Image 1 (cartoon, helix red, strand yellow):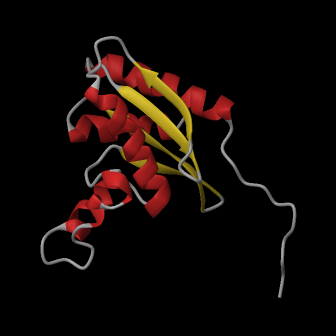
Image 2: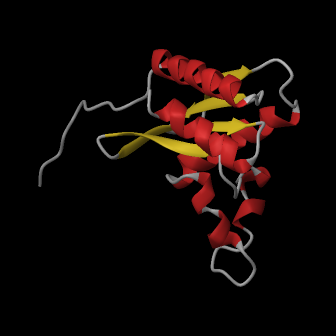
Length: 139
């Protein structure tokens, strides 16, 4: 058995600041004021960035999208089909203090295939949020 010790994979504050800036720039091009949130692998908030005129409801949604993506290690857009009535994870969105978001805008941050954090974007349509989050992730 091979055990690696002292291997720390985490996302840096510097990196998520760059992601927030990239998200704001893409949102400005689309004309959509958004809220950007980033969390570490444990779902702990690292940065919250709210553009002027962004919906105040988007603050909690962006944080919860990031939390969901970190917790489930997938994009939030992949959660919706799993939580529909009759599906095996129906009701999952009601767990964890109702912090699970089953629609797009949250994406995991991966390093060497391992989830080290996640981001969440809220303020536009689901498609806009997903495009902005994808852009921010690919800085």
